[in-house]
Image (cartoon, rainbow, N blue to C red; front, side, top):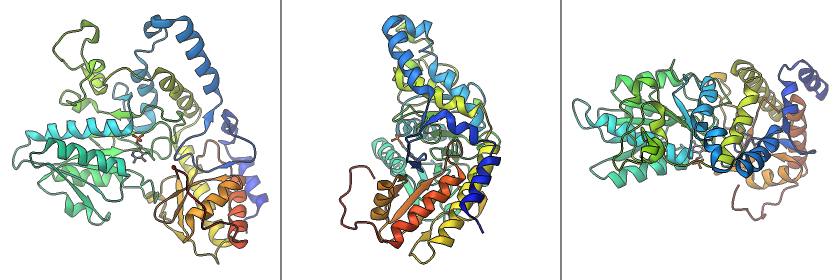
Length: 415
Ligand SMILES: *Cc1c(COP(=O)(O)O)cnc(C)c1O
């Protein structure tokens, strides 16, 4: 039987345990929401001070060159690349995930415009996708008019049948934000290619959470967040990946001066940069962008195989303990038990999910809530311990046994 002592022994053998000291977590908090906003790397405070006081304060405009500000999107993209199976020169950190989705979708539609055969004007995605992905696709399709549409599928089983000769691009989130379901990237991608469509992956809940190999999976385009598992800071710029083989044919409509071949030539005519630079748009939020490096540095002390092994051990333990110790309560596991299909989170439904989560947060166990009735617990192997899992389940058990939650509690703007 698992006990807290067993969990402490697992922590004592955990090769990733020392990395917890690289993060600043407040005392009395068990943080299970790194899937929404990663914890703060300790180095971020000194880095922010350096960027603000020295680079900005003393360097002033010179810092675009002397502090390397101008190259940051590419330099940090190269540092992120190994975590997602990308090569150097294929990733930039820039803009938001929503904006990068717009650029990637528009570029994919344009690549497909000269597709031999029937005009392909359908974007296929899942109704269960994160709403901004759907909204950005709908916005682009309706703005383009000319018959572009978004086709929503209701289940993974329906997906293959929805990818037909009209489909230009399939846009999927690799790990679902609500359920933690993980698509088989290579299998889905090869079906998409067999139908003549392009494959765009959203890695918001994958980058830094599960092993990803975009090039091995022969993916076409990808985007993702840096403020979730990559611990880049609130609202930190996102990333966009364009593989070498597509870069020459990648044309995105947000063609600002940073995507120009020679930005400081100040030419009135646009000419896209060679390579990944053409995925940029305009001036970046340098303070926020610089902090992304503090999150990425921590990953260089380990690798995704070690992170994945611990993530599965943590999520297995959480599922087992909740079922063993809270089994009489109406909790429903939404996340796949199968390892290959699971991301780095566990979601349970409860009829009073919002109120239970609010009570957990009150007691220092920070997860979050997603409609309908889903309590979401994210596990970040860099700073979550096995004892944290034990303690979180004991607090959940107490809240449920004591019915210590207020079902009439009012909700904040952000859940
Ligand atoms: C978190 C998340 C986003 C966030 O997009 P923003 O532009 O940063 O607000 C987008 N897509 C998915 C799948 C996400 O999980």
